[in-house]
Each structure stands twice: as C-alpha cells, then as structure tokens.
Image (cartoon, rainbow, N blue to C red):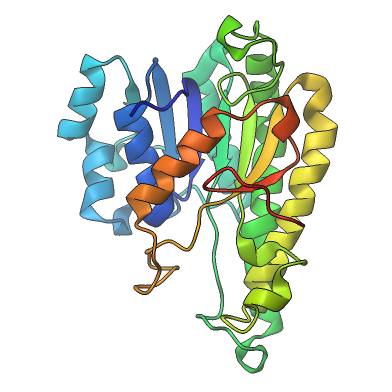
Amino acid sequence: MSVKLEGNILVTGANRGIGLELVKQLAEKTAGEAHIYACCREPEGTSAETQSLIRGSRTSQELEKKKSTLNKVNIQDKGKIFNGQDVADEDSVSAAVQAVSKKIAAGGLNLLINNAAVNKPASPAPLSATSKKDMMEVYETNVAGPFVLAKMLLPLLQRAAERDSPAKDNGNKMSCRRSAIINVSTMFSSIEKCPENFPIAQMYPYRTSKAALNMLTRCQAEDFKIHNILVAGIHPGWVRTEMGGADAPLPSQDSALSVLSVISSLSNKDSGRLLDWGGNMIPW
C-alpha cells in the first residue's frame, strides 16, 4: 500500500512511538518523490531504530532506489534537524526552521505533522497528583510548540501552496500534497465525549492542552485558507507506545499507516476538522 503524499514533509517528535512510525511509513510507502525531515528533542538518547534512520541504514538505502529521500543530519555533525529540536524552546525551533529552510530552498514545505507532545503527570494523572507546573509544561509543548512552529514555517508552507495544485487533486485547492498542517490530537480532547472517557484517565493537563490544540487548528484553518493551506487535527487512536501503554489495542504501525492514509485523502472540506485514524469526524 502506497501513501499518496510527496514533496517536503516535516514530522516532530520523531524519536519514538507514533512519530518514529510515521517517519518509517513515509520513508517506505510514499509513492512519489518525498523528502522527510524528522525532528526530535534528544537524538543522543533515542532508540537504536531511530539512530539507524539518522545514520542511513538499509531503509534509507532502499529510499535511494525509489527516489524518496530521508533527509538527515548526522548526530556527530551537530546539525539542527535531528539534534535538539525542542518544540517548547523557541530558539531551538528557530534553529530547526533555519536548517530545514536551507535544504528545502525554493520547493516550500508541503506537509507539517505536529506530533510532538507530552503527558504529565503519568497516567491516569488524577487531580490530586497534578500540579500547576504540570499544566504549564504540557501546555507549552502541546499548544505553544505547534503554534510557534507553524508561525515560523508559514512562509515555507505559503511557498508550497503558491505552486499549481496538481491535476490529480480534482480541482481541490487544498491537500496534504500541496500545503498542509496536521496537528496530532486525541479523542480525550473532545468536550462532548469527556463524560464517556473521563473515568478511564483524568489527565487534566493532557486533555485541556489538546482541547486548546483543537482551537489552534480551527483558528489556523480560518487564517490560512486564504493561502490554500489545509489545517486539520487527527486522533491516531489508543496506540501501544510509551505514552499509550502496553494495554492499548492499536499497534503503532497500524495507527501510522491509517493516519497517513486519511491525511492523503484530505481536501477543502476537511480543513478545520478533527478526524480519527479511520477518517471519522470527532465532535468538539
């Protein structure tokens, strides 16, 4: 199964879990020419799998054969794409944006996937265990981080959007192959569904930050539509990762492939929406 995405793609939080799997699936399954920029905060402490992608393993050699390139900066080069890109640190984000801009040049950025997120304190994170510090740190990463990154990358997104919309998009002015921001959200962000799932995990900082991210998605969708930049949120499911836990029913590989399949099909009508990994709308 190929993923109908191409061009310059940037993924945050790519050191583990869903972010790492998104990068792997993009590297292996993109149908056209794709240049993937994988960003994470602490590359020196990442998994062997991530290190392999950074340094250029069999996976990246396979990419050369299909003209789909995993753009990487070796850790020893002290570059800013993999090395120390922290979405909660504005200077770090600025450095990463500058590094990516130099590599992208005139092509523009076709797709930004804001995946990086934190959950504090550890689940189930009841009110009694949650501090003001937890609230502020989670908000800074989960909301302010995507806000700053999208703001700084907007000129590159506009540059990509200004190029002619591909004929295969059937007249749609917006698509993730042209210019788009995907904010990774969660079912737990839904105010309407909170009574159904609150007993599972209270997670005050995580829930409220992702609800704020949903509003950011809506605001950006309204603000950027004049530029034909699609903005949408997606819930990847309850995924078996370090954050999701061992009891989660969905493997990261299945989640990532489903997410990429959904965003491959997004068009004008989907901008400003929150969808799940099956393409179903989630109420605010």
